[in-house]
Length: 259
Length: 255
Image (tube, rainbow over all chains, first blue to last red; front, side, top):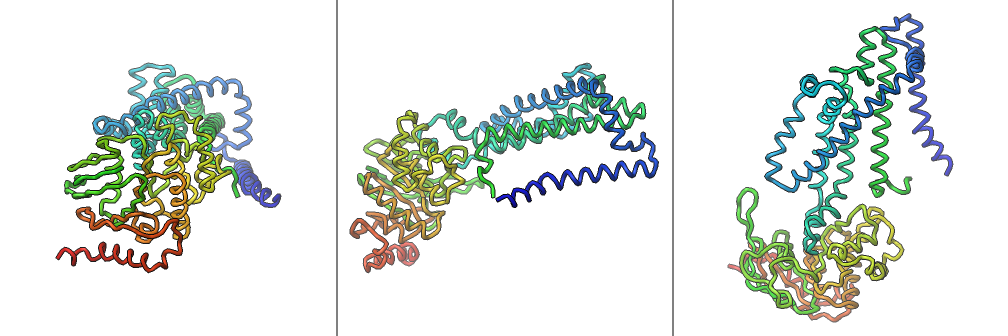
């Protein structure tokens, strides 16, 4: 019993952690051995040190980026899910909206961001909107796929029990779509981070994206790196949070006993 | 109980072709009768069930259930499909309760009958399991319990054991008969297995495809309760030979 658990701990935690530490050591050693200038490739220790020095200022910037990310993510769900419902239930709305949605998705968001900021001005709202624009597509497409994935027999069954369309939606189609929705939401949350940073790149004086941009213009590469790492950590934590919510909302997807 | 009078159903495919799924079907099914419908795929067997359930309107002809003309879905029907189509997020018990919930009945009043049904079908103790923790045969038992829970007078079964392995299939057929003996209802049972159709039913409706028509209705005069041993009965063999010749020798018969 203990042997397989021990093996799992080794394969799930020890091996990846060891690999990461090894890579960091190699990096540290290389920068020292070859005297690489810190503005070209700072050592991990320098990045960590700089990040530690910035810890209080980082808090404020991270908060802004988190706020923009979550705002964009929330908006993508609030807009994406109802749109997906409309698309699945109304063929007319589907042919009306789908091309527009695909068009909105195909426009490069980095190209839209400057225009948006020009129109909406500075502040967090334009970044929230850029994050939303980057993130909404997988939410719509995956939720619509999920809503359409209900087996026709189940719809016949509901109809044979004379259940209303709303009841069928609530008790059959919506829960059936949940795993699909979460697949889209997991992609959307990571895209939201990207969207927020893109928005900050175009014009801002706050946020982790702004820190990266200003740090690079002052050749403070280690600061840019630590901001980048902070962003990645944030994205991973947000992804984990969405996965956690998924596990809580869809407990039937996670096997109770795993061999 | 069910009266089909010159019923026809045609529909258009996406390419615009007209398909005669069911053509000129006239059939009477008595109260508490077990009727099998057998035929090759595409002979309109499933369409027939949908027509009786009021899920799809007939193009021509009329359908009456208990002297009520069928125009839309009505209560008092249980449906079982080839796939169990359970709700993966619901426990076994909650899946059984799904039918009464959708009917707008108070599910808490049906908990005890639901547990009893699960017991009856050999699923006692599985109430809190999720469907994916069950085998295919067990899942189909849950689907049957779901259909039986509101105690419908009419049970429509669309190849209910078609997705099961041969051994589970025979076992489930006899189990269905046992349940049917215990709580009598009218059963319309669609299958593409000739032995299954004969073993279970009072009458076997043989259908031929394109357009879906009734070739003949055979009275099965085999003693009940039925057992697997009947398959060695000479009468059983005679019935299956009859059905087989009706299905496969249709062209010669026509000529």
